[in-house]
Image (cartoon, one colour):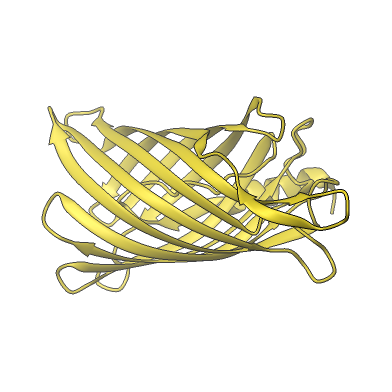
Amino acid sequence: MNNKFKLIIFILSTINLFSALGQITPQGQNGKLVANAAVQVEQKIGKRFTSITTVAYSRRSQLNNTNVLQTLGFTGLLQDFSYRINKKWSVSQGQFYGRFGFDDPQHPTYLNEARLYPRLSYKTEWKGIALTFQFRTDFRFFYPPPGQTWNNPFEFRNRLLGRASIPIDKSKKVFFVVITELFALTDKDYKSVENGSGHYYYTPYKFHEDRTSFFVRYKFNENLFGDVGVLNQIWRVADGKLTINHQFSIDLVIVNPFSM
């Protein structure tokens, strides 16, 4: 199977089944171009609880090329449980376990990650535009493969997200969606000394990246939506400079598949 055929197959596979509450934000990855595939099932449990389960996979290029099939981006499982306090406020608790692939000398072959992330959400409307604001905290734990080392076993990260859904037509079947998310974090790092010993310390807490997405959404009915869009990720690399990558998505949104 040649690389062109593989690319066609992978692009066709980047159809995501996920929550109508908003687009899946792809995991931060170090490639210049990223292709993501995800399957997400959202199901209401009673009047106030919602379960959201996501299985995801991606391939990516390196920062200096555009071969999107070059290496594993990540593969992972996410589970969220959300509780709606009232029409505007909700809280949720999420868990994530995944594997990120690397092929550079600064990283091990891959890193496994376990993550906990509580989240607070607020929804409102302004002149027909649906607005959502979220504050989320990530507790990230990293584990290298056996026999390899990694000096950053833990990361504490805060995320602030804003989302606007703007109806384009009078029937409110077509929407333009803008999402932007800011990240600030601190890492647990290892500092070695001349005698071979060392100690762990926390890096300064500071801004790390921005992810901004643009989508066009079409509403087929109350339970089915379709999205086409792009996510642009700007983040700090090891030397402190900012770099950017682009992640493309074609999304199919299914809501409450077990009660349709």
